[in-house]
Image 1 (cartoon, helix red, strand yellow):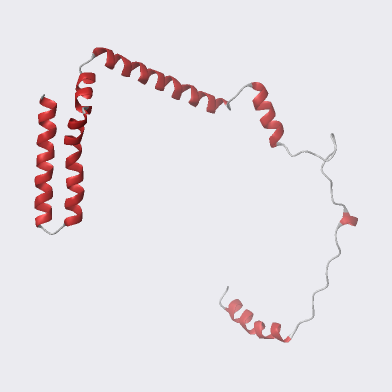
Image 2: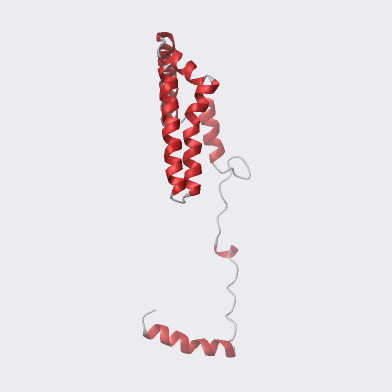
Length: 147
């Protein structure tokens, strides 16, 4: 009974604040305050407050919350330890390491090396055109300023 009275008082106070806010011509804020202030009375009318009050004063419910908290702590601890170890079983870790390594073309073959003969020939520089002459002035200016 006390919970319903408190929720009703909170709703009435919130609606009063919403009315003052609307009087100051802040209608959007007033509508938002009114929406928040109607939540407690809505919870009373749906019976959620009675259920919460019964749960809050029940030792069995508190024991259940304790068990849920313990299970969450155990779950979080095991996940943390699993991540630090690398996770999974030995087979899973071995498969993950094998997948991370790049595979060669043939088993036992090494990566191909490029010798002197396998390099492509250097291309000759194209002849300077008129457009390149225009940029020589810009290059000189940039070099003069140390850029």
